[in-house]
Length: 251
Image: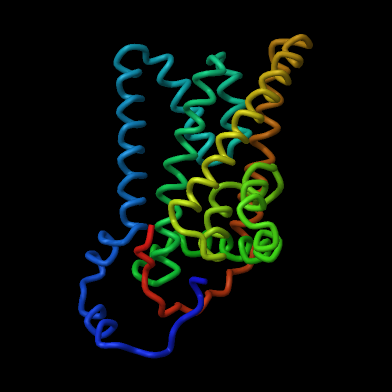
């Protein structure tokens, strides 16, 4: 497991200490994941800009859906997409892309922060809370293995989902690409299920009046804001002592 460290030191370990941090990050598997995530983010932003050049109105719909998903979560993002009258295909593909680059960026940043290769102060509390949530579910996931991790990502309970799920995969020692494959597979299936359910809810609510679906989206946003405010004013999170293990370069 990542938190188990061999106390014995070797000449190779001493040589590793002299390697610049940036080179260790770039050469690691997690570094490659981060680059992939940033590339996907760049492609997504480029796509949005192309839409803006063609149709500013469609761009505004996609942009508000994107920012809502990032700030308030999957349900809010999907709901707003349907409220904007975007096609189910567009809503599903865009939200899948959003969660993909979020996982591919957040996961390596968490690993680097966990190993104290880099420290991003504004994200420290969020990463520590995510780590604690992952630790709380660790034993259950270990018991059921990969299917347990898939179910954890798929079912919509509080503090479950792809970001925490990827941390659990790291903690229980899954290989990087296996971890991401399981987490993202569960994420895509969850988005599909959420989209089908929310689209039916929106169609049903629309029969009661034009503004009823809007009120439904507003309710989801209020719940998300309440949760964020609650944790923003929560007691400071105690820091976990920095581990001394080195990045696992094995894919």
